[in-house]
Structures are given as C-alpha cells and as structure tokens.
Length: 484
Image (cartoon, rainbow, N blue to C red; front, top):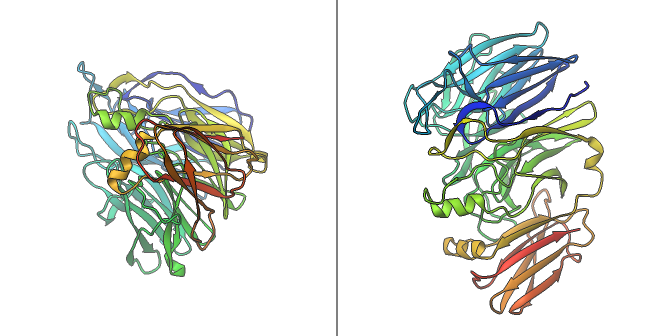
C-alpha cells in the first residue's frame, strides 16, 4: 500500500490536551487507525480513504475515539473500541462534561466496507464515566471478544462480548487495562494506573473458564521498584510480557515460572510505555517507552505531580525485545502512540503533546500527530545515538519510599556508553548489570567511589542492561547517560 503524508495538526476535538493516532492495524488490505481527539476512524484501501465520525454512538459533534489502542481482527472483521463523547459538550469554564461519554466497540467488515456499532455503555454522569475499552482480545476457543476496562469510575474489569449479538457479560470486576493470549489462557494485568499501578496478574483458562491470580515478583537487580503503571502487554517464548513504568514483568504461570521484574528506563518521572501498543515482529516484541504521555499543565494543581510529569529525561524510544537482548531501535519526541507492521515497513504513530488533566480541557486537540515510516531493517541495524539526563533529586527523593535505583539502560549495539555525574558531595555508586535472560538471572554489581564535582564512568566494560544506585542522597546533583 502506498501511503500519503499522514500529518494532523490541532483540530476540533474537545478533551484534555491531546489524543493521538491509535489502533494502527493493517488487515486484509485495509489500514485502520483512529484519530483522537477528533473522533475519526480512518480506513485506507487501494488509495481510497473512508472516515467515520462515531455518530452511530450518538449525535454530532463527537470527540475522543480511542486512547489505548483497543483493536482486534478476526477473519474479515476488524473490531475497534475505546470511548467517545457523542455529542461532546464543552463548557465556557474550560471543562468537558461527561454526560454523553460512551465506551464502545465497533466492527468493520473489510470485505464490504461496512461499519456496525456492536456495543456501547455509559453512566451519563457530568464528571464520571464508564470504564473505557483499553484492550480487545479474541478468544479463539469461545469465539468471543474479551474487553479490558480500567480507566473510569464504574463498570471496570474484564468483560466478554458476543461478536455477533453485542451482548456483554462481566467476567471479572477488578480493573484491568491490558491483557494478552498465552497458550490456552488469557493473562490480564490488574492495575490502578496513575495510582499504585500494576498489583497482580489474573489468568483466565479459555477452556474451563477458571480464574487464577499470580503476584508480582522481585527485580533481577535485587532492588525495589515503585509504582509500575501498566502500559502494554504481549506474549512470546511461552511467556507474558507486561511493560510498565520503570521496567518489564516477564513470567509464565503455565510453566510455574514466577513473574520477574527487569528494570528499564526508571527515572522516577512519568517516562513509561503508556498509551502505546506492543506488537510481535520477527519472533520478538516491539514497543515504545514514552517521555511525555500524560502531564499536569499547571503547577498549582499538584506541584509534585507537575514536576514528575513534566521532567523530560530523554527522548521516547522504540524498543525491540529478543531475549536476552533488549535493543533501542528508534528515538522520537514526546510520545509514540501506535506501532504496526505493513509491507516490510514499520508504521510509528507519534504525537508532540501529552494528554492533560481534568481542569485543562480545550475545545480542540492540542497536538501535532503524524505517522513515521521505517524500514524493518532498523531492527537489525545499530541503535541511534541518544542521551538521558535528570536531576539526582528524583532518585534521592525516591529513597524515602524504599526505592532509588534508577536507569535500566539497554547497552546492546552501543560502543561508547558512559555515565556522567555532577555531585554536591562525595558518594558511592552501585552499577547493576543484567540482561533479559529467560529464566531470569540475578544481576552482577560493581561499586564506584565518587568525588565531589564531575565524575565520568566508562560503561563500555558492561553489557546487557545497567541500572544505578547512589549510596547517599544528593538533591543538588545531576546525571547524564550518553549512548554512542
């Protein structure tokens, strides 16, 4: 398929800041995506483009669409879900009202180019809403759709949806943003994102219908982790991969292998694999960790969260997982919202602006969104040069919460990585070295004596992934990680 230039500047779409390009899926010759917050579902085939405005849900003008990549395909059908205001109501007080916010699932027939509303749900409340559909998983045994719902105030959990009648049934009443198929089970992450994050895993046996629960495991670097918000899930190597703020959980209840935590890109900010998908490519997994996916606009609303959500430690990165290797294969701006494979190319949807909070609604989407086209060869080439930088006050403050280990930087493909520290006093630094071995192996550790002022540590003698921990707090220092 020949792509035109897909660039979308700010346009009408009342909501909180910016949405993005979500649900990217190429199926049966059709490229689908939803443009949020404009509430436009796009279907591209043979150079022709069809745009649907979600008015099967309710009246125009609509806004929203999808912000979590809820999409699935079965035979000739493409199922897309999420949420939508129909109609959108924007008040003069710069608020979006939620009376007409619906969760939804539609079905698009790629053979006859038709769209049908399969299901919708709303609680018709001014400030609260029914759980958004953040994931759709096809159950091949039961020939049904499994819906994950976490973002909302009511009707949260895992639901079964009949893909012919549109009848929905609650299977589990605990909030879950994402899931993945694993052998003959479906694995769901149980989470309260933007709060404590991921709390456990639940597996649904697709044959018997039995649910089981499994705890989160320890980190391979032996240090605590903090607030692992769940962004995306995928499966490979007969294991489930849960991509969270600060790292990855990997494990397989079917093989009696506990979930283990591998620290990745922990900066004690909102840098996380949020509002992005994970896809299988070349037998591995491709996903992204985002620098600026959600943010508080004004410090007066919550100064601590404002600082955490607006400190940008580095570019968003496209990450390829092929254990034990974890490799950076792309560097991007504020955030990546979708990834798809098509005709030997990788489509990467991006956005220049984050989603914002409830007091910061605008009558139009505030982001510049586009689709970047990469050759699949990028998976086999050397990684891009990039750097990360952050104030040491963030990991120092985390020590009050029994945390403080930062980094989790993949070194695969880099020849001259180094760590630069500017310290206000003498200190010690532990460097933990590990990889994404399956089953997991404990990290090795090496301690460095640090002087007041500038310290440069050559990381070329390390391999795999490295994380770091200062022995003492330093609220005035800073660190820079350079990858060349």
